[in-house]
Amino acid sequence: MQIPARIGGRPVSADEWIEVLSPYDGAPVARVPALGADHVAEAVAAAEAALGRGDFPQHRRAEVLERAAELLAERIEEFAVTIAREAGKPIRDARGETRRCVDTLRFSAVEARKLSGEVIPMDASASGVGRLGFALRHPIGVVAAISPFNFPLNLVAHKLGPAIAAGCPVVLKPAELTPVSAIRLVDLLVEAGLPADWISVVTGTGADAGTPLVQHQGPSLITFTGSVPVGRRIEELAPHKRVLLELGSNAPLIVEPDADLDRVIAATRQGGFSYAGQSCISTQRILASHEIYDKLLDGLRAAVATLTVGDPLAEETEVGPLISETAARRVESWLAAAREAGAEVTGGKRRGALLTPAVVADPPRHLDVYRQEVFGPVITVTPYRDLDEAIALANDSDYGLQAGIFTSDLGAALRAARELAFGGVLINQAPTFRADQQPYGGLRDAGNTREGPAYAVHEMTELRFVMVSA
Image 1 (cartoon, rainbow, N blue to C red):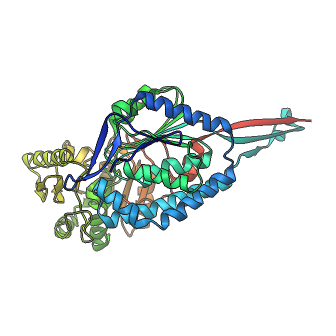
Image 2: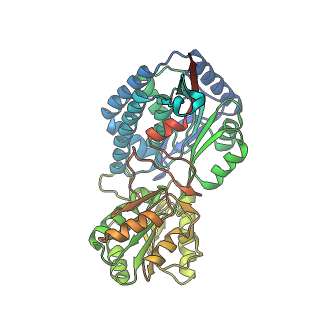
């Protein structure tokens, strides 16, 4: 099935096409055009023209987002199957992503309804007496959005929804491995009443389509979710633009001796292995009090061994394939390095892009499997002496996206909230949890922004001060 890209409201093909294949069995899902710099320039010009018309007022933007949410809620299964096929996400998780996307569109519609400026108290200073001052929020301009493979629907919505609410046309470059969900979401938005030229979708590789989009002078803002090296390269290529980055993590979870271990094990079984660990906030580093380390390790190994690995379209599957066999081989090599360094590894057997869930006991701190973002179905379990050491271990990371702690001690929980240097601290919850309305983002190499429609809308607007003198 050939699916055209979309530029300025019209379908676009190309001389060369990209094959979108199932990560599970390599079956063809679709073909999309491999676009390049000329197509990007055309898409940016179309977005600039849409912005210049000024004919998409706030109430209409809200109505489109509300209607799109209604349409998507009626098509959960259709979109979930698309996600499962192109991304290899288990169908149950794919349904969950689609339902979350409905929420993201609804929250974006709310922001479109209430987007407003503020009154400035001019007479708070002697020079301002007799004057009226206020600040209005204006669209920042054309938005360039680059989305990742792991949430090919909802993370696209987290870029498109706020941009629409803010009044910003978009040029979207979806992940080349999972572009179909993005294209279908844009089609649905147009069906809901979005001006056909408001969002252009340029499919292609990062080198051929992504880099020209980043370097183009037209977009005022770039929003990117993906790897740290690519994010930092985008900052270098676009020094005069606002660049919003949501990058990586190796999320820690502290388990205090008074924690409910059954609850911890259940949360980790889900948070460490859903979508084969391919989430920025996948629970990766379990930091366990030495008092309960052995008991927790045994419990985690037993629970992880019960996970069902296989076909993402099968209802019973809990862990599907990694996005590619190359990705699975990388994780396999990191586990082999852990074994060679003396760590005890259970699981981690590879078949194609499938990798059985793995538990690594007390790995040396320098290993990739501990220090880097695994982005695979792997957790590490490390003992600590006291809460001081646990917080130090958690903070000893290049990343700072989300962290979690399980404890029944309110004092320990509040201390963790104060001292864990992360964008989010979750108490009695695995760090993999995300509500789509929360301010989501991190510190250090985890990124530089906060997503969630209410927060992203403000990033995509700029304040214009107006003063009236009598």
